[in-house]
Amino acid sequence: MNISPGCYYMTGLIALSTALIHIYRKDKRFLLTTGIKVTKTHFAEYTFFSIPFLVLMAFSIHWYCLFILLAFYLMISSVNYTYRQKTRNRYTLPFLPEKNFEWISGMRKNLLPLSSLYLLALVLLKYPYASLLVLWIMLAIIASFYQECEPSEVINLPELPPPLFILQKLKLHLVTYLLFSIPILSGYSIFHIHTAWEACIIFILSLINLSLFILSKYALYEPSQNLSANNLLVTIIHLCMLVPVIGQFLFPVPLLMSVLAYRRSLNNLKPYLDAYS
Amino acid sequence: MLTVNSLTVSYGKTTVLDNLNLEAEEGMIHGLAGINGSGKTTLFHTIYGFIKPDTGSIQLNGQPLSRKKIALLETQHYFYSNIKGKEYLNLFPDPGGTFSIEPWQELFRLPLDDLIEDYSTGMKKKLALTGILKLDKPILLLDEPFNGIDMEAVRIIQLLLVRLKEKGKTIIITSHILETLTSICDHIHILENKNITRNYRKSDFEKISQYLFGEMEEQLRNKINLGL
Image 1 (cartoon, rainbow over the protein chains, first blue to last red):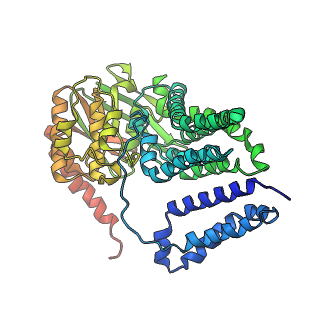
Image 2 (cartoon, chains in turn red, green):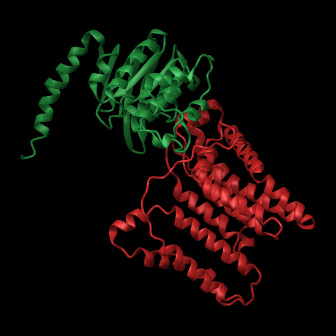
């Protein structure tokens, strides 16, 4: 079985995703206190969760990518972790409106990975698909902006009934994403003028997935709650769309889920916003 | 007059409020006291419209109460942690156009340019209170506004509520600490056994202590006989 040349992209993507997971996982401090052999545990976890990809790689002509990936896992698992107080970012991106608190907070929280990926996407503009792939990964980080629920005081501020509230929210966030992604998309279209339609398709799919992230949040909204479990599910679906062969069959899933999440969010928001109908 | 008539609220088969009646005069501070789980927050959520009652009605001067007239301060707050205090307050509209951040910042000693993640519980509470006061609504429902707040801030909030009352606001506060209510409330209502069982005017507040430290204490003494 030959899956070349996507194998290089796949290796890079998995390595990048694993590195991000490793950086952001919250159990590192806890694991240190338990006396568990942290390096072995991390290495085993990352290897176990990437078995499907490792099998695909083993049967491709670029079988050596498998060992590169395993070596990478070993390397990141071996990095010594020391706890220190986080330095918090207070920088505000100028294109973000004040009402978009999800993005303001999320951008500050993820400024380092997002800015690194953004730069990477710009650097890779002349390579086919590379920038679009990075843009797709960035959207997985953006999904985490929607795992927290605002307090009831805040959801009531626009004084709008559920359908209008959702519409306003979608409009604000989709426009923000457009402003965020436009430099990469237009740059890609300039370098790959004959295949610019691919960038358009990726952009449309990104908008559908972003809508799903927002709608899922309000489908399960409870004031001041954290919806990390739901958020993980939609992020996994989003990332699975990158898996060769299987991924393309997943494209309709977010659209279908968005329709269902929209209907559910209207119902779920009724107690909080129906008073404005 | 805010009137709650024969209100019954259930969660599934559990009745939380049973045929509850409450009258809250305008331009007054009403305290709602009760033990944890007595239904204070449920009553607030029902007045605010989050929960639909099984039976009963809530009216303001004989008309169904509109949410646009109420501001609710919830007990617990989880803000987006990486936004600044100032950004949070800017989310709230200022209908009167008279709100200025600086005096509030000074009054509550809030570091509004810091991220909310760095705020203490009390600071978050003060920030949330400032936000809903900015809305300038005629009815304020404050659920445990004194929780997690230092002594100085408790007194500041008390004085602030008295000032708001003088400006004609109707304020209903819950607390399970009676002392925080007696110093500012005009009426105190005791919520127990799914209903408001006792209403006290300011002149009768001494009777609350008599009830709590007399009759009720006797019952409690019997309850805590755990063989110690």
